[in-house]
Amino acid sequence: MLERTLAIIKPDAVASKYTGKIIEMLEESGFSIIGMKKIKLSKEDAKKFYIVHKDRPFYDSLTTFMSEGPIIVMVLEKENAIEDYRKLMGATNPEEAEEGTIRKRFGKNIERNAVHGSDSKESASFEIPFFFSEIELV
Ligand code: UDP
Ligand code: MG
Image (cartoon, rainbow, N blue to C red; front, side, top):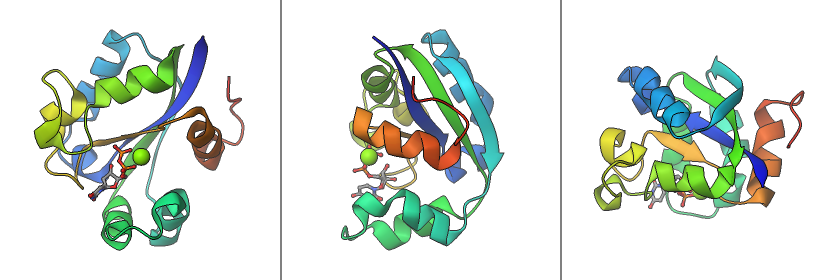
């Protein structure tokens, strides 16, 4: 089924100039970029985006990291986009990510792991309009 998902190139990867290589991996894996912009989140924006993690011990550090510098936010489209992009990203901890995944190649540690991706239809339907009010979910 044709699906859309929200992808973010995180501040660590943007600062390290991995944007082009990550976008190349996305396009070579069959994803179409429906929307894309470079923005900088405030700490408050990052806290709203990651509200699902508000009670986790890493919430404060994560939201500080996500607001430290520019990010690239994208809406990706493909058959089975949500699950397939999660696979292309790899495990949350880059040390556990498989060869050929974005996090294996570009992630630094469990927090500074290069990319974000929606983990379900429900999260995609919160995360896509969070950044792209003009783009339809599918
Ligand atoms: N994170 C962290 N420590 C952890 C787990 C997660 O710093 O123990 C950060 C990491 O940047 C991760 C984000 O919080 O990508 C969201 O966590 P989640 O469990 O949703 O992982 P993801 O869906 O990004 O793989
Ligand atoms: Mg997640």
